[in-house]
Image (cartoon, rainbow, N blue to C red; front, side):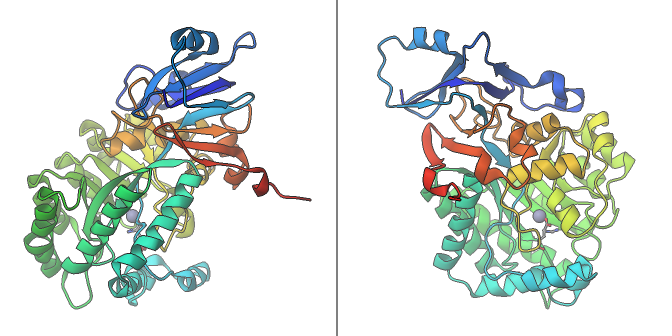
Length: 437
Ligand SMILES: N=CN[C@@H](CCC(=O)O)C(=O)O
Ligand SMILES: [Zn+2]
């Protein structure tokens, strides 16, 4: 066996019976699967040589199970809690340059679309990303992914979308592929060639280019196993790709077997959720402006809502109608939306904002950041909960109640003791990191 963690005070499994997701009333407190220390006896987790969870139970039961089996690494988690590794359901992590100057403009009142229409925003990042080499982008991406892992992320969705031309979109997907092969966390790639209408093209010309040039090459590379791509994304928005263009791009992606996971109803209520539900989209993000009909249709289509509180605060948007979605039975997932507009690499921070800004409970937020995010990406068989056979991916929290990971706002560096991926300790807090007063 690769790893044994013993004597934990609480192990939050999230689900314990192979649930694919938790939605509606299931996303509330009563259904969170937790093992808690009893009569002074803690909880153990055993990880096999393949990095999968072999057993989770009270210490004495696991000791009986182990007998004389050799264990390579043992961690004593006395007084600590364990949660599943976090899943970041929506990020744009491959780009060069930054947009700190736009942050200053936006904080003085400029809107996202004003900056975008003036040639800034995504266009600014596209110019910088087109100019950057694969090596430069890889270094930037791996540094960002390392910080995410340090904050407990073990699976991340990563989009292309700062190329908007064939060459750069492919460059971005190759950089993501390299990161998949070089770093311990899992990555779900999304082709987002329709992230903005490139300068010099109309939306309908860009739509044609994506469907006739970019997508076929992405699929050719996927089929030859040069890259792996799970999903297709479109920024479906008034003044960007509107409903019919978005539908055409998503339909084309669906025909190639990609999952549909796209930006909908973020800034203007144009019926993106209704359109996505009609295509059976697996996931839609943002949804600040979703209509009541859109909520009903998402529930019927089993589409996940991937909510992004960092963008809501960065752009001072209204919050999506989270309670109505939960009450209607839409499964809520969460993501950092890491991009040059919302520079956040921390799922604990996102969970905090989901609670404080969206009014979600800590339990709902944790479910959104684990099993539901994993399922929104189609990774629920390996990620999102601590169950036998799933990846041995978890976060050890240096506190006696798991909610500290949310409660200690901005305190990830203090509260996370270790991050484990497939049974390997990929991060552990050292004495040297403690502030010396
Ligand atoms: N809304 C579209 N895309 C990103 C922002 C990307 C950018 O501004 O660079 C988002 O999800 O927030
Ligand atoms: Zn996004």
